[in-house]
Length: 416
Image (tube, rainbow, N blue to C red; front, top):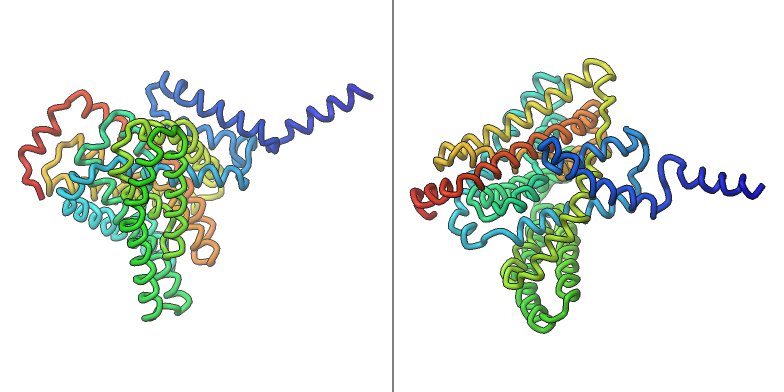
């Protein structure tokens, strides 16, 4: 009887999906440990390993792990962390000098994908006008999934990276503001009060983050510069406070996380130990957790549900990649970048994840988006994240091996 009780408890612990939080966290840590090692053997980016592992252990794979509140929490932290690191590592002087280039790339990476996506949805796939408009807006978004690769190779201050990050913020902000506009158009809720409330709330948010937070951060870091933990906890608090305030202002929390990075940029960069802690914790835990959670969303079985599902998935994926590649190509031609820098811009801007998912899920809940577009978007997320990882890895390696390339380009171009 005693043996039967032991066996019963063991069986309960290993029932699928795993529910024991200790076992779940152990599994995640094992993946974070092994994925880069295994991918390195095949010369694949470690990011790809995290996404593939997420597919394998997720509810549509071996069903070892399901999406629950704990996984959602850690993945949200990881996404916000990516956006925060992009902001805090940005060379603000370089960004200010090249801000017109970020505006140009932001315009291209917003407009070109929408101009490709709308005809695909409306004419090729035959969806209604509002469905096509909402889905096309998803084409314009992208997530800096491949940014850790750039950071690993020390390319964060490259001009191509600076305009890619700037363009990311511009296009994602535009799309995430466009989302409530489209939803308001569906319900007839657009009006002067909507725009007035949005402008006032964004102005208050900007005042808090760029006027109040920087002096507070400088005071805190000077006051507790010898403490190893308090400055880091302060940084995390500001990141998540900013993300929450951005939600209150009417935009997605990823914008708030990036704004927090900009607000803390100078103060954090003056403390190398703090910067190392931020990079270490993010790359060791939070960012891999987010990438694994992205993989858990992927259901490859949707491709077997009939030709329509496959046609939608393939059309959306190819359209999304084409739009981002043309945006990168247009930027390269205008500013006379090298082919390697074009690949780097494409790699950083081609991954669709968080903002894409947010838009599609909102549309699905509002019954604007059907199952085929939802499932096709999940396939799109997988393919674009993998393509973005390979493109960014390849371009980063080439720039490391050709350090004089960017220097020559910078000398030739006028400072804007």
